[in-house]
Image (cartoon, rainbow, N blue to C red; front, side):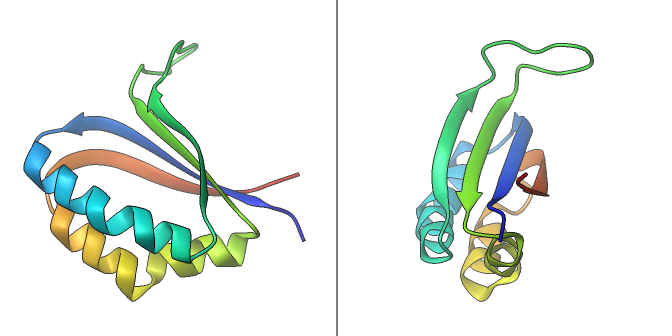
Length: 96
């Protein structure tokens, strides 16, 4: 069973209060799903068509744990709190 990685790239955080509310709910939801934060910062370097956005990398025991966390009720509450407060994309990637 390979580890999995949840990668979030923030293009814009337009509402700091919504983002703060999201963080308060998201961190415990992700930890409860087995997620371990490996990186949370603005990209130090960006190459090719990359952007120096805020990037989050979270390790999970496996892809199903990452997906179940994202699709679960606790994280849904965090997404509701965030609403339109940020523009980002999230990718779940299986490890090698």
